[in-house]
Image (cartoon, rainbow, N blue to C red; front, side):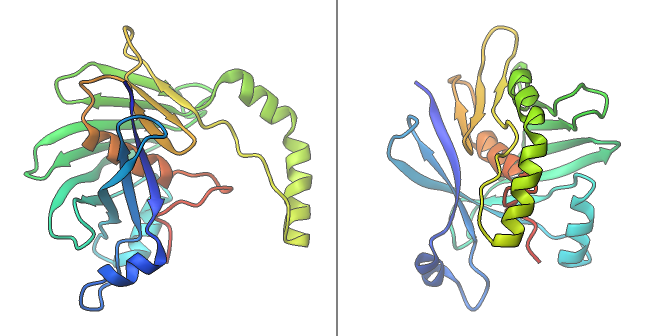
Length: 227
């Protein structure tokens, strides 16, 4: 049985209820369901951890692939569940470490941008502490081929959308299957991270869905790029 982690905006009316002492409320929640389409409950609340220099410094660093955020166990920010930090980011390759509430290592993510040396597709490597390395590629080659064939049409639609304020441009293929050689423990589809292997740590999965959503394309809505 596979479980599902999904990142969603916190409804506006609930955000007003949980804002403590004038501090901006946490804007997103990651939900967990025992099966895709099953009843989901909020388990983590992601929030950027800003470096010295605040938001401008964070936004400048994220252009090079740097990310840093905390996963709170509650919307009131009382309990830290996990933290993601960037250990290196250069030449299209970024490495991220995920730490637990006590600073213990939960695992690492490595993102190798398309055409940066790993191939034509963006490569994601997930390593959970004490478990085998899992490698996945963004989208399938066939669907990328189809998408690029239709790219001139998409550009025309995008221009029309900007002029008229309407229109729908197809996003590039986003589905990712992570494989260890023996199994497929993780999958990303339609904004969900699916945990197929029982040994997968759901905290690592929650950090992964938040990281993936921060790399939404120009047609998407990265949650961590607001001013």
